[in-house]
Length: 163
Ligand SMILES: Cc1cc2nc3c(=O)[nH]c(=O)nc-3n(C[C@H](O)[C@H](O)[C@H](O)COP(=O)(O)O)c2cc1C
Image (cartoon, rainbow, N blue to C red):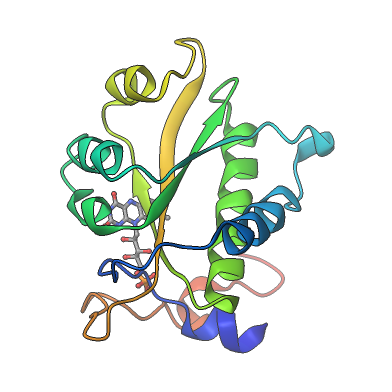
C-alpha cells in the first residue's frame, strides 16, 4: 500500500483497450468502501464509457482534454456541496484511483467547470452537485507524467505538537 501511495501519478494518456466490466466493478466497489461522515455515503457514481460522451465531457473544462482518450470515467455526484460531502467524495475518489493502480489502470482526477452542461449530458437531476470526475484507462506505453510532481517534504507540511 505504501508503495502504491508513493508511486501513484496522474495518468493522462491511455491505450484504446477497454476496461473489462469486472475490473471496472472492482474499482467501483473499492470506491464505495471509502469512509464517510456518519457513514452517509453521499456519492452517486456515473460511469461513462461511450466515446462520444467522453469527448463531450472533455470539452467542459480547460484542463479536461485528456478525457477524450480515456476508456471510461467515473463522475462523482452528490446531493449537496457541503465541505463534509466533498471530503467524503475526495476519499471515494482516492479509493477509486488507488484500486485502479492495483489493477494496472491509470487514472486522473478532473474538475468539472461546467456542471450544468455535464448534468444535462448525463441526465443528472439539476439539484445534484457535480464537481469532479476520475478518468480511467490503461496507460499508453509512452505516457508521460506531468513534470510538476513531487510532494512537499515532511519538514514543510507537518507541524509536530503545535503549528
Ligand atoms: C481536486 C482535483 C482536481 C483536479 N483537476 C484536474 C484537472 O481538471 N485536469 C487535470 O489534468 N488534472 C487534474 N487534477 C490532477 C492534479 O493536477 C494532479 O493530481 C497533481 O498535479 C499531482 O500530480 P501527480 O498526481 O501526477 O503527482 C486534479 C486533482 C485534484 C485533486
